[in-house]
Image 1: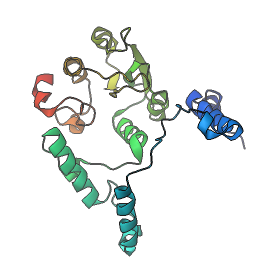
Image 2: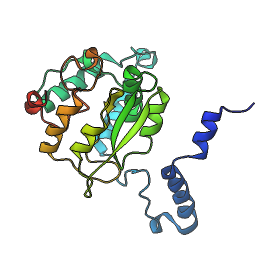
Image 3: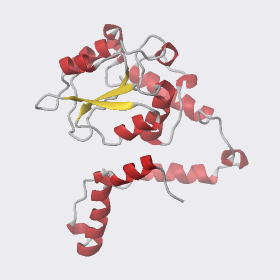
Image 4: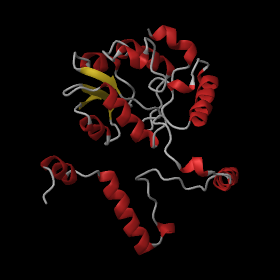
Length: 228
């Protein structure tokens, strides 16, 4: 059985980050892990705190039959409630468990969000350099990733971003510190970014007329009214 031409093309352009990671494993086996410094995937080089291990053991020991059954699609209610409480305190904004959707990592979250808003041909903007997988996330749901150049010091170029927005633009992906440059965007630049970004034609029910919390969480909640 042959694979699809699309998957064949993706394999031919496999992530160079993964290739570096795999070569790093080979070099560690050859020269010893203490002699190879692997910065490819950002794996932690410190063990988790003992408190985490303790709570993990307690959770396993106290599991009942119901803990090994199917859960609601959005996640366990008690987990969603805990996350909502944490975000409400951190962001100083009202957040309830009904606004929380648990996913398997950030990649899962981005794919769920893009699947919810993208129609075929819609564009997703992101400053470049960017995380190389963004292209595949957009493509997974019929979208097209459109990159926007940054300044010489990798700061956001607001004029370039505004010029890149079109009728097809549906989302703007940003993370701070940026992956891979490490640039931390200033509060003033993020506040200014909010003005063109919040005019994107995202379905009203997703943001309900206010900034989507996790997309602009780098901006303290007290500044949100200025972004509208």
